[in-house]
Image 1 (tube, rainbow, N blue to C red):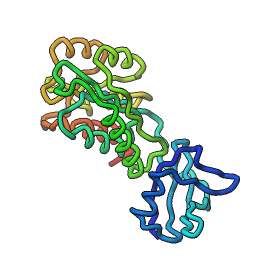
Image 2: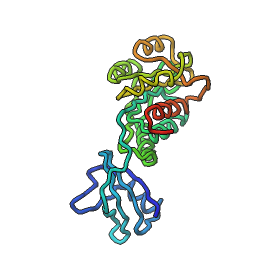
Image 3: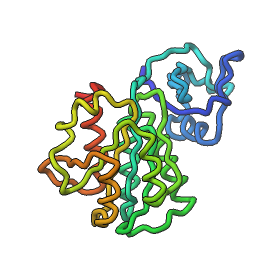
Image 4: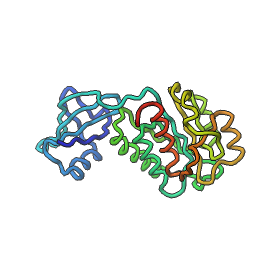
Amino acid sequence: MRKYRVFVENSLINLDKRVVTFDKSLQHYIEQVLRGAQGCKIVVFDGSGKEYITAYDSETKSLVIEDVVSNCIQKSFSISLFQAVPKGTAMDDIIALCSQLGVDQVYPMITARTTVKQVSSNKLLRWQRIALESCKVGGFCSTTEVKEPLFLGDVLALLNEADLVLFLYENGEGNLRNYTPEIQRANHIALVVGPEGGFDPSEVEELSKRAITTSLGTVIFRSRWAASVAVTAIDFIKGLVG
C-alpha cells in the first residue's frame, strides 16, 4: 500500500485518543488530492523527530494513529541559506529544492543588485507553504523555516552564529570540494548565494571578511539552481546523498 507523508502541527496530534485532528489544508489534501481513500496510510510528521503512521477513516473523517516511529532522517548538522531574492518565480524553485535537500532555514536577502527590493507578506506566506509541501518529499525529521527578508547588514551579523560560512562567488577560488575537511567538521553551515547580477564590490568585500569565498567550479549555473547544487554538494560531503 502506498504511503503519503504530510506535516501537521504538534497541537493537532492527540496520542491519548490516537487521532490526528484535521486542519483545513490537511482536510483538502486527504479529501481532494487523495480522494479520501479508505485505509490510506499517511505518515504524519511534526518536526519533533517522530513520525506517526496513520490510517484515514472515511466514516469518522479522522486519521487514526497506528504506530509512532523514528524513520525520518536525523541530521547531525544544520544549513542556513542566505539567498538574494531573484526576479520572477525562481525563489519558489530555490525554496522547494533546498527544502527537499534538508536546508533548515532560508533567509531571503535584499542586496544592492537584487531587482526585488521588497517582499510582500503574501509572497512570504507562499514561500513558507512551498517549504512545508517540499519537506514531505525529502524525508527529514525537521522542516525548513523561511524567514523574513533581510538586508545585507543584518545578514552579516547572523553569519557570526555559524561554524562555517561559504560565500558562493563567480570569482571565488576553487570549489566546495576543496573545503571538504571544513565542511565535514562544521555543525552549522551558512551558505550565501547572490542575485543574477552578482554582488556589489563593497558587499563582496564585507562578505569575504566573514566567509570562505568559493565557487561551484567551472560550470556556470543560473541563480535558480546554484543554491540547490551547493546544498547537494554539502550533503554529499556530509554523507547524506550519493
